[in-house]
Length: 246
Image 1 (cartoon, rainbow, N blue to C red):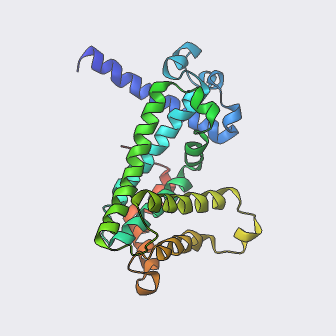
Image 2 (image 1 turned 30 degrees about the vertical axis):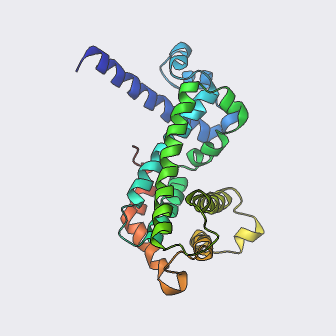
Image 3 (image 1 turned 45 degrees about the vertical axis):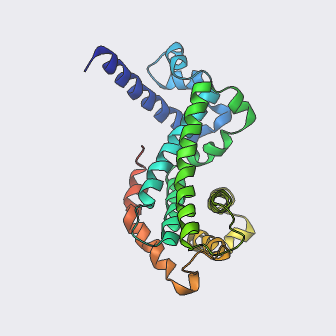
């Protein structure tokens, strides 16, 4: 290994360690209390060293968003390899997204909060470019699956005119349901429901509405969700809080 390669590896390792500490800070006290000064105080590094990695706390938040997107992408890539029909594979994406959010709820939420205008304005151009790269990778996984279903006739609704529209509908129900279950558990409209079944049912509403075959009355999708739990080894992941990254 050359000196340059060794230095690059050391920088990457330090970057990971700093992000670990920043993630803990974010989980403990939220974005408003996340500062580079606090990150420096929590680690062995000077504030100048911290600034060599992150130009601002917004840049740091975007780096955490990228970490979340990398985890999500790795789980999406695993989901599309799930043995099943096209509807079961898209259910696998919903399952993977929800599992990721339960293990890392802070990363799940910061991917959206990281799109606030003031965060984008104060994030370095290089960091924003990296974020867009991984967003594109994540979006492309769902887009490809939807496009294949449209071309094969598995999606029969005349309203499903293009992959982007169908993909957004799926992301909206997946993110919306998961975010509400995390942040509004005591709302009456949620307390009266079986929280373990809410996402599964909402996904069925959307996919049946798209006439994505086989429809829910013709297939045991509850069994699909159980198979996905085994496929992702859910209990082990929840226990370790570790997820793969690309």
